[in-house]
Image (cartoon, rainbow, N blue to C red; front, side):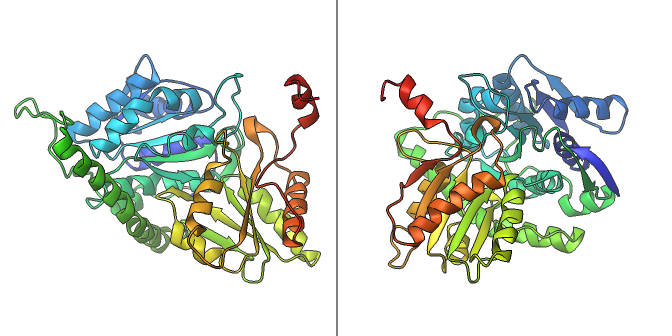
Length: 399
């Protein structure tokens, strides 16, 4: 059934269709509509689940850990400062191998306070041991929300997962979405069966207990193995989903890359804008292409090597910054190609922070710098686009 829903609702419907049993949540803009919609489903008798309102996001993730450890399917939602407040518990969830799924309304971190689109919140959590998926549109939000459970719950993986939707650009924007039938999702996901010792008052057990130096590294190595193994499982689930529902997903999606000298790398909703820009540039005879990253954790190194193998210049456009270095995608892409003899020139472009629009003008500026690099000119490795640099330099006493 085709319906019109907001991005937040796509996550709520994914949880409903996945028959999530416990939803602990604390409201935060721009993801508040997820628990609101779920509480509505429960109140109307459309969803059989326990909704747990808590006093903070830290408590929400703590309750999610407890519920998942009891052996039920668990989902929640948050954004920005809320995700940051969950930080220490995110490590506990992944270390205990609990397949919780979070919907994230990707939003800038304070200060200053900003409620608009930015990927800094999820990128800041990339080392917590969670799978990370980024949606381009509301359909992807729904589909990735469903698939995240199947991937996370696979006995070869047992790691929690995040699904990111760009704040307001997706979370509050209404788009047409193909809503799958409940029976089809039931068949696709199956009933949740925990593959670990669960909390039971009749059979007391301690989970996540003290780890001495003699054992701690083995636990961390097991998480590493699971994350590496997830690459294959994600491909399997994506293929199964396409066969069942007809929509194709890839960890990395190359477009117009076969003959492209310059290739843009994108994540999230900017991918749609970039795609239209690339079409316009190709109509003008420019040899440009793009690669969209859907799966950031595990990082799709082999797929990116293949997709970018013919590129001369790679323009990484990203909505995050690691101060003192550059963007997260830029750093990981650079490491991916570090030991290769023939590798493209990789340039980083910081764009769209705090909800600043990414327009054709933005991408024209990116392309201009990439073309300079293609022609052998010196170009900065990290470039801030659409920024009033003169005002900043003056305020910092540099003029």
